[in-house]
Length: 390
Image 1: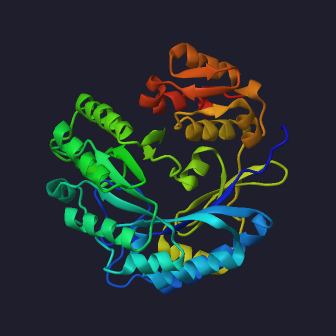
Image 2: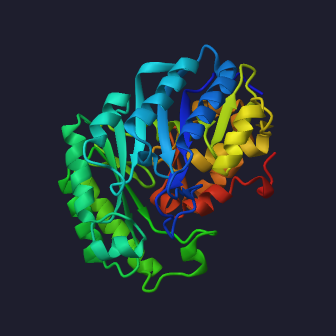
């Protein structure tokens, strides 16, 4: 194994409750009910932070992301408690990007100013659509007006960076409807738009009972092509398969995932990845159910769920992430982030180039072609361990 430089470090905090479970959602989220045990959960997060702090002593946490679930179910003062606990255990950079996901249906008037005061400096607002009927079909608890109110409140609260999540390929959606959704999003002048196709994931209501009038593949691709072009015309650069940003507003936290950085994980079902000083890469996962997580945080020492990655897994996970980026990766980056020799993957990369899904630039870097980005799953599958990685 060649010498490995420690990659950037992030912190992901999972807040697992939602008012209602959307029928397309395959994330680890749970219906909140009348009174989810938020105070117990915050205490469990504090213990989790404490248990992990020693493993990253001396390293700087460059980004923090509070995801879910619906983090905006937690009040601003509760979010502040979480961030204060995190700062007590980790060396979080002064200029850290600290993002929180927010559902327009759970943001109370004045709350966003409270989140900003608590230390959140970037929002990700789950709009999904601006069409009232589409939102109802998706099981969302908000309407178009709530999205507009959340965006206006975010600006007045002092947020100078926020993302809008938007979906296409929705039940009953036409190309004109998709374009109107995107035009409305662009008019709100976000710094970032996540634009992704609705897919029917296993273990979701939509997978077991597919909604009627789903656009076919050809129609969904027409939406993608037209709307990607509109995003580019509006000044949003595509820096990941589904992520578009104005210059300088790319999500640093997500880029760290896609560039095979390290990230601490806290919260129910959260996944983490850590590289040690010797270049050994390990993954871990917290218990998925909130109550199981709360119990485990009180008695399980850190590290018991660590799993060391072998060469095959490292190659696949690196490619699984970095091939989502139109910019691709450099050979030097591959060797630094994985600790592996380039020769281990060279033949497979060249095979993908022959198939037209990858291209090599100046013998120093590789990037997906348009074909490779469109059929990303097929491209990534070439690096599965079952395909004979050495």
